[in-house]
Length: 387
Image (cartoon, rainbow, N blue to C red; front, side, top):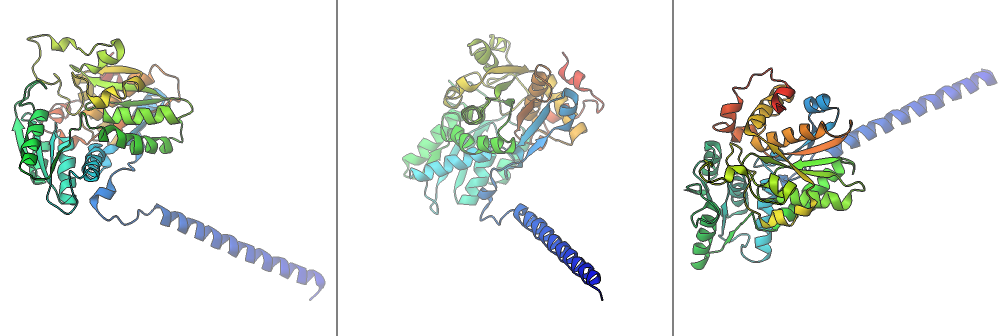
């Protein structure tokens, strides 16, 4: 064998060795990547709360030229963003000694449904009991869920907040009566309790920041208690180099639209003799209100404008998203999606928009989806917006 032959052999050996090293490195890389994406073992259902996905809504993005994303809060274990709030309320009560882990205790709440479901789930997981007061016209799915979870359910007539028997006031009275007997208990008070907005500031906002790479043009959410839009918008405004435009999506009959845009908490539907329901005259559950809560007030300055969405638009949008994206959403998510399209048509192409996907349509079958299921599957986005 000559010198040239030896050189060729060495070159071949080195090439083979390099290929082996490269192949092994690639294998190790993809193995570590795979292992890092496997969720760690959780010690309880409460550890499943948060870190929800951010999903591109392809139909709305393609139609508007913007990138429209949904923050999938419906992926929390009890099915809504209220899981975060309920858990933080309970943890805060434990820090103050109102509840003691491992000892009997009660959590009372007045709710239109979702917060009560989150409270009931967490009470079961943490060893407490749930007592939920809610309007008796709440969707039957939410009532069935609460009863299935073993919560004590107190159904009351829909009424104004000034009525002592209104569902929030009823929950507060029940809590006070229990505590007066020396039994541990806490009134969650989601509308006024700052544990609400704080958890969205500490968790939901930072998640959206990371998922968008710190770049976001518009953030859109509805407002019921005010906790989500306050906590998230406060965090994003304080931490993003270019502050996103924050939009409150409001259903018909709610006063937030006029409050944000004109400084008056009033809606024409409030005229005496015209309103059919005591709280907000809409088929939408979970958002919309005609009073200012503490959670809303603390974040009002971070909200840039409000978009009004009709029941008809929300119903049609829900069907549109189901047919075109496979997203089976509830009424408040549909409201947010309509607002996203309205804003996208006003803003520059390529803008990044995030909406909150609050809960799934399965909680709204007997009311909202009773109407939405009848919408034509071939409905267009222009027909949804109707403007």
